Length: 64
Image (cartoon, rainbow, N blue to C red; front, side, top):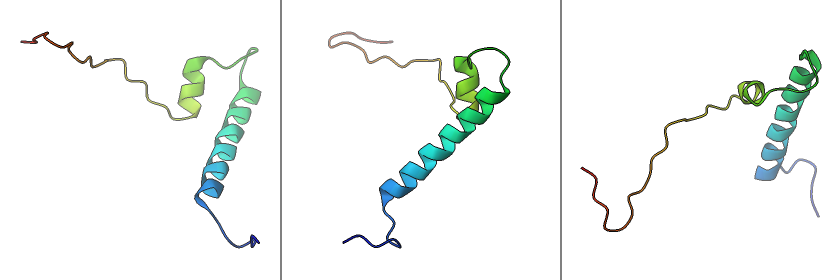
């Protein structure tokens, strides 16, 4: 039996997802045009894109 007062980790995750969806809906309703750009979505979700990629050298390949 589950009590209403018991909270789980999934409750916190679900609430965070609902909040992010709400932020996206607010941004979409304020947007000019038909869709939000990928950059605007990243901005709303506070996502930082790292452009520099680190590569792992192949076996036998030496960096220097």
